[in-house]
Image (tube, rainbow, N blue to C red; front, side, top):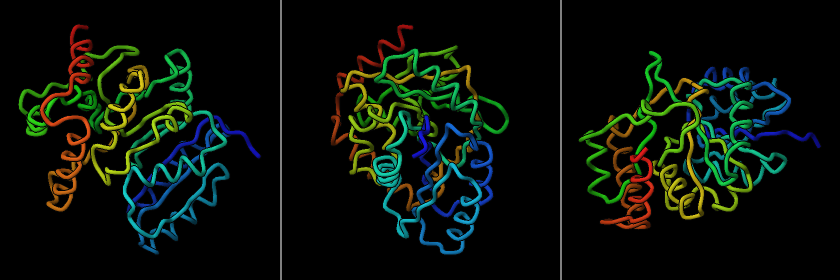
Length: 265
């Protein structure tokens, strides 16, 4: 069996096959294994992606023929098919990243505590820095203030080099596979949205930390679809309620401590 260094887990849902092709081209490397898990039941798109995947020996494609949710699909992918790797990279299909950038992140992660989730700096198409570094929500009121863009700051603008942060948007997470297993992966109560927030919050309960490596910059197509489609907004709202039901609606002391330590710096 070929020993890969990192397993890149990608969950798709009616994504453009050309978008997947670009990712496979950029991550065609002997140390990288790619697992694509398709949540769609679109036979035409599935056939096209499957055909593209066959051209790359380091990639695998599996179609679930139903939408089981973002986190559950990643769990299925990583638990069952990423067993031959020490590291995992949870990657959105709308991210532009090269193989040497993933290997750079691995080298950075090796210098940090093993209980770490690491992300590159996410950029918009125009090169501006995305608002991907955030404080942990200390209450449901705090969360809705941020969601409504009240007193929202782009904390990613304040990062330099390798920086510890409270929460990172989950477009590109690198961590040890054994840590993901210890955290029991993404929590099952989140179908879509807040699963990355919950994973980071579980990490702090586990004694870990989140970091951003600003030396590694990648482009991410941030769509914010839940502000455009009512159905997705309802799903997002349901996930928000599930998060605060789990960690506390009105006060999260651990979140407050993590935020204060970050703001002091």
